[in-house]
Amino acid sequence: MMRLDDNDDDVSLFDAEEDTGRGKSKKTKIKHPVASFFHLFFRMSAILVYLLCELLSSSFIACMVTIILFLSADFWTVKNITGRLMVGLRWWNQVDDDGKSHWVFESRKGNSKQLVSDSESRIFWLGLVVCPVIWVFFVFSTLFSFKIKWLAVVIMGVVLQGANLYGYVRCKVGSRTSLKNMATNYFGRQFLKQAMTKEEES
Image (cartoon, rainbow, N blue to C red; front, side, top):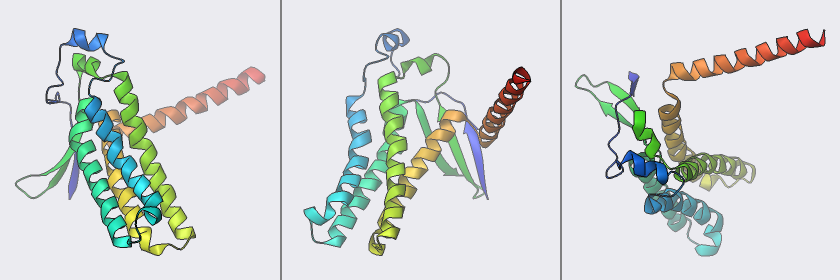
C-alpha cells in the first residue's frame, strides 16, 4: 500500500544556497546555465531523434535504444538535479522498515524561495509541461498511422516525462487534498461570478 507524504523541510540544493540579497539582484538571470541547458537537452534530443530516426539510421533498434537512453538521462537529470537547482523542488520515493512505499514531495520555504530565478523557473516549467504533451501527441499519431512498433517507445516517453511532471506539480501545489481544494475553490468562484452576473442583469 502506497502512502503519499508531504514534507515542508528546506531543501539543500548543492551550492545553490547563496546569500538572499545576492539572489534578489539576480532574480531574472540564469544562475545555473549548465543545469538549464541539460534540462532541455536530453528531452529535446529524444524528440528530435524520434522525428528524424528514419533519416539518421535505418536501424529501428539503434534509434529505439538512443531514444530510451535520452529519456532515461532526462528523467534522472530533471528529478535529481535541475528541479532542485532551478525551482527549489524535489520528490522521491522511499520504502520504510515495514515495506511500505512513501512518496515525499519537498519545496523550499521562507526566504530561500527568493533564490529561485524567474528565467530559470520559466525554462523549467516550459520544458516540463510541453514535452510530455508532445509525447502524448506521438502516441496518437503512432496509433493512427499504424506504426505499432514505436508504441512502446512513445509510451515510455509519456510515462517518464509524465512522472516528473506529476511529481513537480505535487511539490508546487501540495498534497492531493490541496489539489481538491484548489478545484473546489475555482468552481466555487466561477459559480459565484455567474450568480452575481445574473443578479446584475435582472
